[in-house]
Image (tube, rainbow, N blue to C red; front, side):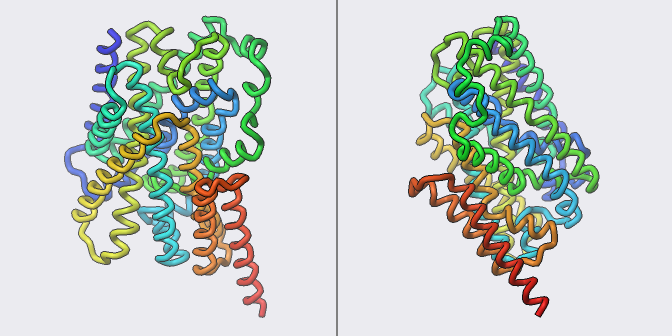
Length: 454
């Protein structure tokens, strides 16, 4: 019954995407859903990429180890979506561009565009690795295959997922899986409650620290995690793609605002499961917290639907992020060197780039089998935004920042963010990188104002 319900759920959700994609797909339909998306479709794309293995399997995993501090991923994503709705969505949608890097290019030139593209590609690739880890954690609970074979299966399914229709299918699937995901996590909370793991019981029986502190891993580390999510939400191509696909500026804002409301509760529900297992005294690999709960405490038919929902969530997020990388490569790198390219050529480059992304993520995930999923996700989000956040804010609020200073600001931010963990320096590299980036930008704005006065 378990496997039957898994198959039925996956066939249903993927069929929704195939039907939504339609028969004829040109380049704009594939990447931006024809710029006709309604608020629910915008939110479907945005949450389809934000809510994945990290915010479900990864959150339950970290909650099992650290408790409430696992909330920073979905809480930070909700704050980032709110800022996207309030400040970024309207100017981005009005610009008529296809990518975030193109928006920056209009303000600061091609150099800044290419820097944004490279930063986005590096960070988003790391996020795809996190989704591989989450998908394999789910598969390993029910499929007795070697880890490399599980990774290979995940790679194939992601490609099948996204080649079925690009952003149009991705938006439709995002909306369906969001409904199923809320149903699954609420059902988990109900089962946990019935087992006696009420919020009151959890607070009573578990140590206040670390399990009920938002700063269990240290204040600066958790603030760095929250900042990483905000930076990543505002500086990632697939999230920009969500608002750019909207039918109007108002629609883009409403879609992003809806995402801001729906994102944080997902994390709290996942944390409840991790803490319930900790109170139960269950000893397992942390990555198996959510799969174990589903398979052990749910009726088999319902656990199959829930498992398939989480698996599709991880696959869908990996697909959306991979599509964002492919769009960045095809538009912001390929087109910048090949000035004249047909829509058909760009579509081919997009799909080939997608294949390369999956191959690189597959190889990397094989080497990262034992690491925490959220650690990769925090690093990914921070790297995506460290190089573009400050110049993007300056562009949106029309601050006088020269192209040269904008590039220096962005390059410094992403360089520090990348080198800090590699060199194992003290402190939080992303937080430090953004602060230095902001100082350079402020210096540039001050000089521009001073020059105008003279």
